Length: 143
Image (tube, rainbow, N blue to C red; front, side):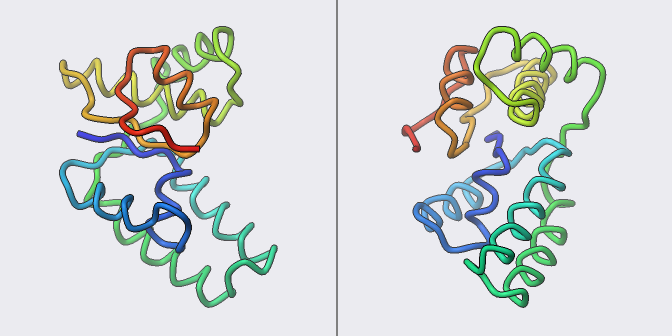
């Protein structure tokens, strides 16, 4: 199972560097994400439209497609265990709160399934550094 941070999921719906590779990863096995991604991904689409990087029609199409895909994936809820782990991560790594929740969700999922995640996929250097420090496989380095 691969865990996808919101920074990676956006690339499934909006053409950016690594979009082709990201789409291939999403098709290559079980997908997991944090419930927080439902908000962060839509926020990214809205920001891209505000910055005129994509049209409002593209924003709306991407949002609709993303929301339709989520039920097919494993969604990790933001539970007390996830927030407790996120608090620890904030004290140990240079992360923002959202990234700490994402990484906390991945760590809790790994614990729940009782085996290592195949890969933690993100496009944020600090988050990847923290994931690697927490012994998650990050695959090929991104950004």
